[in-house]
Image (tube, rainbow, N blue to C red; front, side):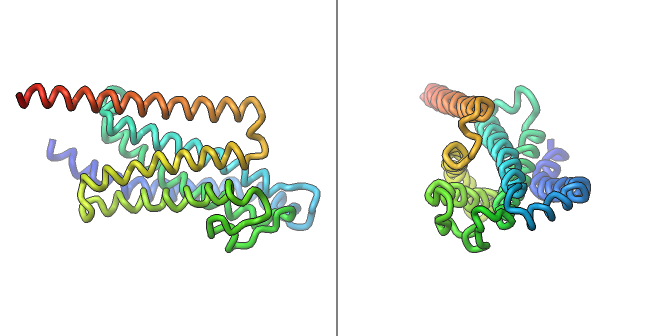
Length: 230
């Protein structure tokens, strides 16, 4: 048991390194073929390649955030013990969090190359600073990005803030997921398509179902504890 503990504690650092490594490897593989397209987008107003790339990374980032939330609920409800083990679930939880954050940032920065919207770096990084396209709903997505950053940082500050406060702060994850889902539904140009509608419905339903399961198991465990105490 003692031998397994250091490995579990090292997972956050390993996850961050692994996520960054995957991103760099993917960049090396993808960028050579993507550069000509990106160059064409810079000199053309007719082909919104940057918009397509930004939308694609947004969808992947959303799925990573969804998986991150699912892993978090599975860990807190001990559901992860039944299918993957806590160590693997924790590793996946950390990995998806860091990689999803990087892709979310990449999603926003890609819009700097879009001629139609002409975003500035300030409008990309400052929530609700954009006025070109659905400013409130875009700002909601930007806000969720910073909430996500705080969630990642809170893991490394767990010992400082205390386990109890850390657990309460992690409810921000639900808020972040809700914000980014609403942001995607309202701001996404393809949100009305059947496959995207199905994606949002299915992912949202799974998070809702797991949340209900977490609440019910929490109530059951509390009753069992009170029965034993009596």
